[in-house]
Length: 351
Image (cartoon, rainbow, N blue to C red; front, side):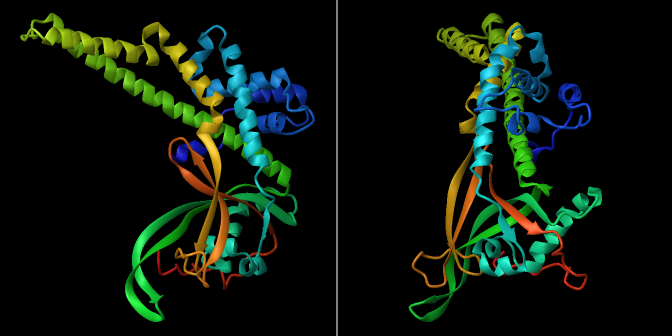
């Protein structure tokens, strides 16, 4: 599923549009048009910009859809719905939390996501090195989205039971790994705008994956149909009941192919799949609240346990079953690790 979080690729149609509207700043992206700037008013989007988003949708799913008359009209409303949904997801993301050595000790979320303050700052320094290299001057504060994968594992460990230390007690260890930092910027607005673009592209990636599955399913159905037709016409159906069963199988395959498309109907079926997925963006990408009671070793505890810390996070889910913890953070750019502290951090013993 890593492909679903790709950085945007070709921008041919959009860059041409940008050059016309902003000749001095041609690199302004679709995210600026659709998710920020003055042109969006009262939740409505200029038609030229909606059309640009439609063309991006076609580029990232099946470029042959342009051969269909009326493809823009069919995609227009689903694309707008998808833009609104991802915009709402990012807009509802809480304000960034400040990250630093002092905050690590005070915020239980940071202590749960990272082994130590050193490890945390080391990761931030590495992920934002390119930003400093491109900037004319080092920004005082950087905003970015931290993505962390959560997993749980049943283990046997030591614990206090009725005041006595016992071994091999069943426990659940919560691990956070795969840390990544997306869209670091000196501007929170710019970070949010780019995150909306990424979320929109994630929906397009889900549609692209579904189309690939449809192609494989169609090929399998055609193979089954050829095999059944051969049996029906090639005198291989020896029992009286077999021809009826074969025809029933062919009817089933015909119904399945009608949904997935065959021959001249393939592109129309692909268009409906893309439009249907974008029109149901809320079922493709959503956020759920996540509350965990963890001890300092990230072991799940009962809420009444004196050693339990309440960790409130959010978890982003998609229709392919992937889940990831997003956390908008801000940190002071000058708070880097010194050379003597920039060494690999120890892992929690439960990992």
